[in-house]
Length: 338
Ligand code: X2X
Image (tube, rainbow, N blue to C red; front, side):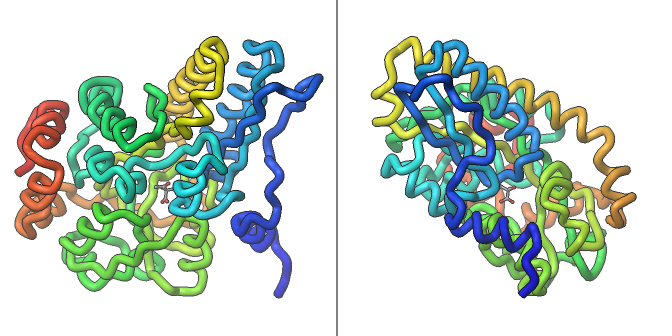
């Protein structure tokens, strides 16, 4: 086996190299040294802004609070790290609400297919009533969550075999989805063959042909170098996805109030900067990814939404989430889905 940067990262993903990549050492041993994990590569805007937040918190607390950041699934795949967060092995974890639904079922409501038309609607909803509803559910499950959600982005479908132009192109399509009932249900409604695979394994799954496609926002495709193992990128915008900043309740409770404040303020401020970074990237990424080899197409989203409705997808999820949660979603987007 040739050792590449990728095999090293896979080793890291298995926990072999549990040394934080991003680290500014405090002058003296900090009173609180907390671990933060996420699945995003080091050059994703999340990790760029987290590195700044780490410094800012160290300064604001006069060196009392030191954040150790473990990007790229260094501490394990998402569903494993969620367990570590619950037990306190990890103190903070940035996770998609849609994956979080494996623990907090209604947290995935922002991921309902084709619900959000644009970012204005997303931020109004997630900084407003829909976000408050989701955070209430998360806190009810015993986790701490910061107010501001970070951006992952609008998700697009890539394939090694063909562009996705119509819903019929998804029939029988072997596609990787993150581990979550909502994702599996969405692609089952299209008649695809979805495989639940954690992000840590996605590049290899595509490279070895376990699946023919996957779906992610353009920023993830860039930092994960997915053009190396995929050819077509179809701009379906089928779901908006973010990352909640989650905390272990005991770890959080052990911090004095002023330290909690410094951490929360800096995490929330970093989230807003990260949103702006992704918005800026969105302007240039398509061209960049085209240069790297992706072939783009723009399917009509309406046909895909209609197909989901015909398949009973919206009715099913309305009854799963319940009338109250569904009403908050529909009011946030200003239209009825089911
Ligand atoms: O796993 C994915 O595809 C990713 C990186 O988008 C999420 O965290 C949901």
